[in-house]
Image (tube, rainbow, N blue to C red):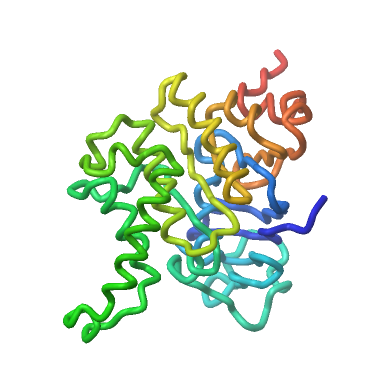
Length: 283
C-alpha cells in the first residue's frame, strides 16, 4: 500500500456521555478512492467533521501528507467522563485547525446537504470560491488594483466549468439546475476553493439522485480522480456506486470499525451483513 495522504489514528468524538466515533483508525492511500460506509447514525459524518475541522475530536490524531492537522486528548470534565480508549496517548500540544485552514492545506470537501449560494449563477458559485485565495485588500479593491488577479480567477473559473461539463449552464441560477448537476457544481466549487487539492472528501454525493444520475456521478467521480490526480474519500449509501468505484472500503457501526477491505471482501463479511440487515436472534 502506498503512503497515506490522510491518516486517522485512534480518533474518538464524544458528546457528553455519547460516543459518536470510537477509536477510529484508517489510512487513505494516495490516488485511491476509499469509501466509509455504515448504517444511519454510525458516525460517518462525525468522522468527516473531525477531519475537516468542523469538530475538535475528544481524542486522537489526524495526519495529512504526514503532518498532524488535528491532535487532541480528553480535557477538563471529559478527563473523568471519557469513555473511549487511549486517553493518555496524545497528551501535550493540541493541534486544531479551522475548516478554512484545513481547506487551504489541500483538503476539499462537499457536504451531505447541497450548500450552493441560491441567488447566484453557476459561474458566480465557483468564482466566489476562487476568491478564498485572492491577494487583495480594501485599497486594491477600491482602486481596482486587483484587476489582473480578477481576470485570472474568472479565466480559471471558466476553465473549471468547461472541465466539469458545466460551461453551458454558467449563467443559470445554480439551484435551477437538475439535482445531479447541482451535485456536480458543488464538487467543482469545492475544487475551486482549494488551489491545489490533494484529496476530495465527499459526504453522500449521490444522496437524492435517481439511478441514471447515480451512474453519471460514478463516472464523474472516477474522471475527476484521474484528471486532477486526486485521492477521494467518500461516504455513501448507494452500494452500487460504492462497490463499483472504491479501491478500499471501511465499515463502521456505532462509531467503531467492524470491517475493511476490497469491495468483494466487504460484501462477503458477515459483520457487515449483520450491521446492514440485522441479526436474527435464535429462538
